[in-house]
Amino acid sequence: MLKRLYEEYDLSMERILIKEYKRLDLTMQEMTVLLALFSIYKKRHTFSINAINRRVEYSINEIGSIIDKLLSKGFMTIDLESKDGKEREVFDLNLTFDKIQELFKNDELEKKRALTENEVSATIKRFEQGLGRLLMPYELEMIRQWYDNQLYAHQSIIEAIDSAQDRMSVKYVEKILTQQIPKKIEIDQDVDQALDEIFKKIK
Image (tube, rainbow, N blue to C red; front, side, top):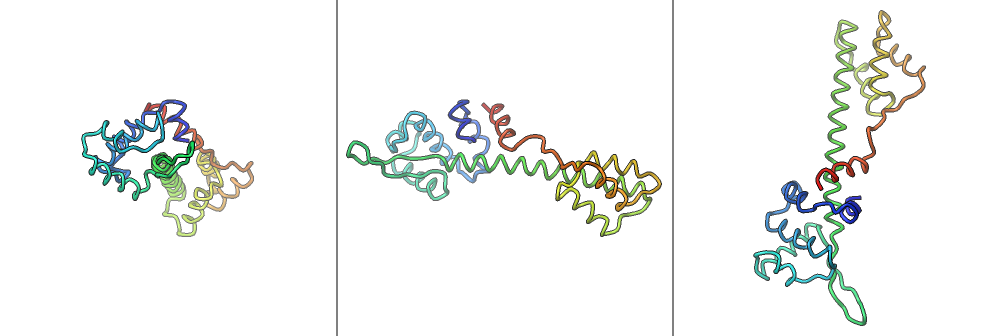
């Protein structure tokens, strides 16, 4: 997905790497060489220390050492390719795309987890206000299952609590919910679509 955005939308890898290199466990030197590799990658995939050297202020030996670290950290691969009877080294940055995409996916999942926790807290508070007591452990577990298993939309749960009135109980609210047309929580947008929007903004 990220690679497609890079190729089709001219996504700025420079902005992403400068912003996220620490979270990607890259040093400044590794990030600089990786940016040089992306600069070359747009034109060709042939690996050349000299081509990198023309784009950074490090010595040949320093670049070689940094490349070794990028390889060991899983940001790139280098392979031999045969063409016209000759062998040449070619590099691939797919692993970097994967690492950055995973970073953004985890960010999106963390946001969803935080939202769910807020919704669970709001539901518990609504119940406890209606019942005039703290919920029992089994009641808390039932509510947690509604959200963890995405059985009902948050708004449906709140509406069911409100409609229970003087018959308020977790079991009764669950009965109301099960009698409704099942509504699983709708994810605002697919992770890939979310990434698409994020990366367009970065561009």
